[in-house]
Amino acid sequence: MSFKKRAAVAVAGALAGAVMMSGLAADAFAMYRVSDKDCASRTDFWKTWSTTGNTCWATNGTVDVNLLLVSQVSGGNNSGYFWYYLATGTTTRQQVTSYQNWIFYKVGTTIRTAVNIPRMQITGR
Image (cartoon, rainbow, N blue to C red; front, side, top):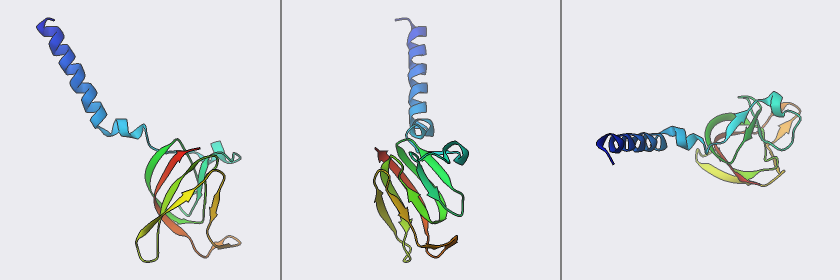
């Protein structure tokens, strides 16, 4: 193999390695937000209801978020976990199975107890 070809292969390998080491590769395995208008009438998405907005989520993976005063989490046709803060300031992990809803205490539209969620993970169906 000529010097030019070896150099080209080395550069291509280095670029591929840089992309894999960057956040670009990791983002392929992250949950992502789906607009509420695209999933409002559907029941198969992972959904959260909170003061930061009602949000639908898709794809297996993990996402670090800052969802405040979450009143409900629904797994849709997914299973996974969400972490939430306890009154002590520590976090606990809660499992969600397919089509399971976690509804935190609400009276009418007033949230009496809600949780702040720093992380969620969809693990499959």
